[in-house]
Amino acid sequence: MRNRLIALTALAVTAALLPAPPAAARLGPTWIVGPDFSSPPGTTGAEWRDVTATGPADVWALGVLRNPTDNPLTAHWDGKSWTAVPISNPSTTLRYDLTAVDAVASGEAWVVGSAVSATRTALMLHYNGAWTAVPLPQQPKGQESVLADIDMSATGGWAVGYTSSADKPSRALIERRLGADWVEVAVPGTDATATELSAVYAHAADDAWAVGSQVRIDGRRTALILHWDGGSWREQVPTEIEGLGEEVFLTSVSASTADDVWAVGRICSGDGVESCRPLVLHPSGGAWKPVPLAGNETELTEVLAFSPTDVWVVGYAGDWLTLETDSAEHWDGHRFTPDADVLSTPGDGVLDGEPGSALSAATKIPGTGAIWAVGWTRDPVRGATHVVRRG
Image (cartoon, rainbow, N blue to C red; front, side):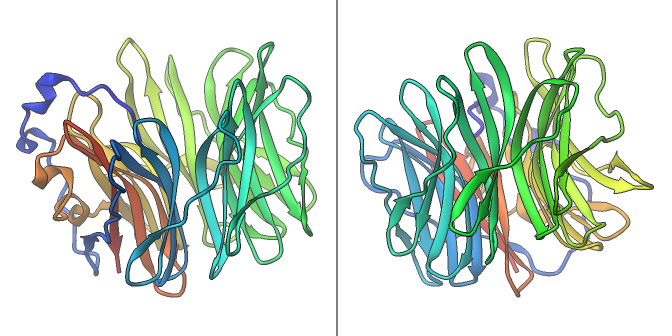
C-alpha cells in the first residue's frame, strides 16, 4: 500500500474534481470488481501486494493483514472462493514482511520477502501442501538482505532484491535456482554507489530481465536495467529521462518476445512534497527510450506484455493531495490508450466515496488473455484488499 498522508481537505473533495481521463475506445472485455476476500474478524486493515495464476481456477494473492501489527496474508482462489493459506512463523521474535508470489503449477507457490527482527534477512517460502522455508545463500555477518520479486519456471527460477549494512550502501542481489538449490549470481559492476532490484522476468533460460534503481557516483538516482544472456548479467543503459533533482524507480518488467521488452515505474521529485509521474521504457533503435502515456497516472506498478501489439500497464492516478484511483492503459502497437472502464468499476474509490484505491500488481491468466489486478482500497477508518479483473 502506498502509505500516503491524506489531507483532511482532500477528504472533502468530491470525485468530480479529479482530472477526467482522456476519452478511451472500448477495448473489448470490461473490468469487473472481485472476487473479494473477507478479512478475518479483528482486522484493522488489509492489502494485496502481489498476485499470480496458473489458470482461472488457480490464483494466488499475497498481502498483509493488520490487527494491528502487520502479518502476512496469503490466499488461494479455486474458481469459486478464496481460502486463506496461513504462514506459520516459527519465532515470536521475527516478523515476516512478504513482497511477491509466483506459481507455475497447480497447488504449488513461492513467496519472497524478508524476516525482520533487529535486522532484515532475505526470506523465501515454498508451498506444496504446506509452507516451508527455503534455504538461501548466507550473506556476510552484519549484512541485511531483502528479496523483492521472484519469477519461477518448471526448470528453475530467479529472485532479486538487495543487501545493505550500516557502513555500506545497498547492493543489488540476484539469486538463481539450479536444481534444488539457490545460488547467488554475480551482479555486473557499474559506476553506481548504490543499487537495488525490484522486479525480475524470465522470458527464456538465456533471456531474463531485472529492473530497479541505482544511485550514480554524481548522486543521481536513475533506472537500473539488467539482462541475462544465459552466461552473465549485463547492464542496459536507457536514454537520459530524468530532470534536475528527479529520481527514477522501476517497479516491473515484462517481455512478449526477445525484442519486445517493457519496463515501468515512476519519476519523482522532492521539494518537500513528493510529486511523481509514470514512466514506461521500451527498446527502440538499439536504445531504451520512454514511451508516452495518455492518462493521468502517478505511478505504474505492473506491465504485462502479451504481444508487441497487446501490452497493459496498471497502477494508480492521483497523489496524496487528491483521491488515488485505479488506472490501466493499453498499448496497441502504436500508442497507449487509457481504459476508462477501470475507473468506473462498481466498488472503486470514485463511486464509493472512499479516499483512494490503487493497483499494486497484476497477472495474466495463462491461456485466456484475462488479467487479474490487485491492490487496496481505503476509507477513513481502515483499508481493505481490492481485486479487479478483465476478460
